[in-house]
Length: 227
Ligand SMILES: [Zn+2]
Image 1 (cartoon, rainbow, N blue to C red):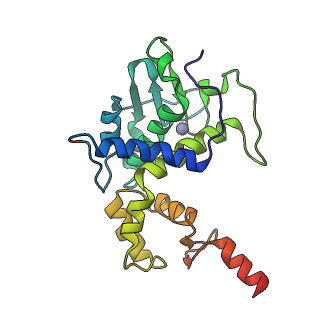
Image 2: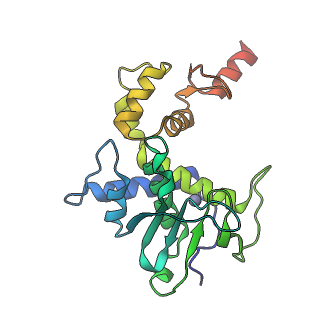
């Protein structure tokens, strides 16, 4: 057994379910009901995870955004991200919680002294894990998948569909001013918000463009094809 779970493919629905499940349990627990703008450290508290902001020097493979020390139930986040735009800290912490929930073998974490390092650009010790390399299409790898899963989890945790449904009421999502109001109310970054809204197919923003279209890109493509 290793402190890292063997790689597994999670469907989006299953990642969303894990995040919603935690939010639901928090709702049922006194003093833990989630509120928006979201405070991801409340989730860490709920899961009995410590969080410290610290200077983490880069190693020979590059910058390190955060580390999880599983046996100490501790998430250590590089304080260098404190100058990033609002919402970035919440997103980073939610991402690390995603790794904890999806990728850390929590039983093992209680017994083994080992440190798992999670870098943004390079993946340090993760890369040394002996799991087979799994390629899931162009430009994708097992590490990319793990990072994608953690980031998707973060989006689900910070922006549950039910809350977004509430926040979109009476708002024209093709106007940036409305999206900026929404991201402030949610406590997320504008890029996290637009990614999530596009995920639901509520809006689409073509790459390199600032124009927001209603509906998903696929639907528009089909309209063009058959229209
Ligand atoms: Zn990560």
